[in-house]
Image (cartoon, rainbow, N blue to C red; front, side, top):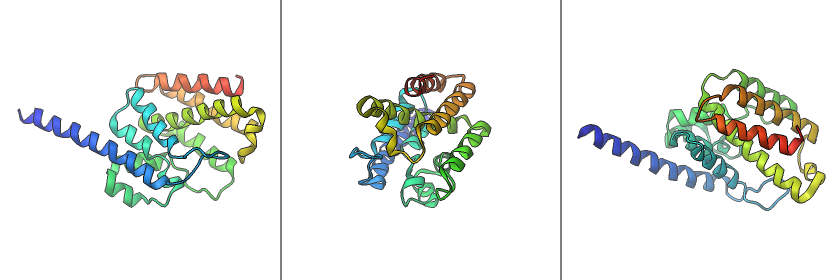
Length: 198
């Protein structure tokens, strides 16, 4: 009876925090928009969290997905995130956050590639994979609507973007070989192929 009650409380807590994370992301990303569009930026982290839930990941991992850009793109601090969502979720978000946004694009992306090749915690890979899959899906739609002009809104040209996303897609495919994650990685590889022609 006690175990059943504790299990119910744990489910309630996870669901409560899940909705708090969604509200937190909406609040923090505010009126940010995606590059070259009037599309609210917050739709991206919401999509990332949704993809993680859709592919069978835990609520904790989905929460990290909803919050994955708050350290990188808002004034949110690690301390604030730890206080609101706990050590584990704050750590997961830190792991998918670029450490120094002042560095050149190539340096930052090379750091991400090396980090995701080496990181041992597969839940970091799950959040990163869902992030890149949603970006790729947005790129696919942008190319469909705008053609090659779509790439003008990015700091790095299309060949550099191709290197980055196809390299990461291969890492996810090689490292996420079981569920949850294998189907997410396979989808990422497929959409990267659709976007970049490989």
